[in-house]
Amino acid sequence: MKRLLAASLFVALTVAVSLAAVANSGQAAAQQATQGATAGQGHGTFSVELAKALDSKKLKEGDEVQAKLTGSITLPSGATVPRGAMIIGHVTEAKARSKNDSESALGISFDKIVLSKGEDTPIKGVLQAVAPNPNSDTTTGGPIDYGPSLRMATTNSAGAPDTHSAPIPVLTEQSTGVLGFKNMTLKDGVITSTNKEIKLDSGTRFMLNVAMGK
Image 1: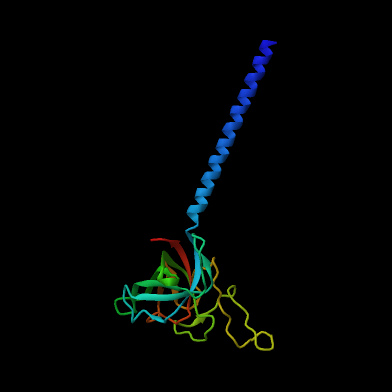
Image 2 (image 1 turned 180 degrees about the horizontal axis):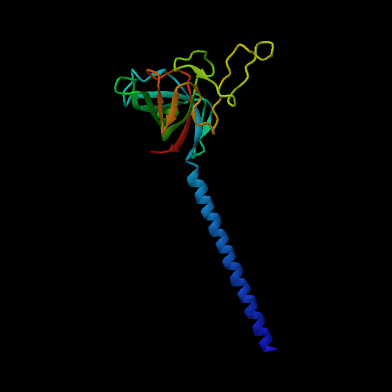
């Protein structure tokens, strides 16, 4: 009888220890997952539009670049930044095509989000994709070349498709490279072109790959 009681107590103790180990393991895994999610909240993508036109022939490294949010975003702190908020960046590289350079180039990096009351949130924003101003017919950046999978139908006042309007490229979080401009490419935040210079109208859209903080 005593042996049976001792064996039962031993089994019960072993099960309790095993359950405690499983619980601790699950708790540790959950904690790691939470920490990973928290660390990942400082990175994402969002779309902006140029506030002023840019010309690689007239710019130099360090010149300020101004853009505006095309939609509201939420910061890791939980604060909401409204559409139209200013995003400030700078030129990292600018040159026109010349005898010594076969391509023109324009590099841009974005540095901060300007909040209300003069507050700023530092960011590191790299160009992920570029597209023309969807609300303008001007194409000073070069001939338009709209990809077949990146088109948005336009309509006239009667609601029927307008066959006379050019299709409009639409930037999404998955967009990469240059969309809508011929003879341009994008790599590591620098736009290059075989055109004499790179001109981007105000309203030109950028999809930024953003990390919060510097």
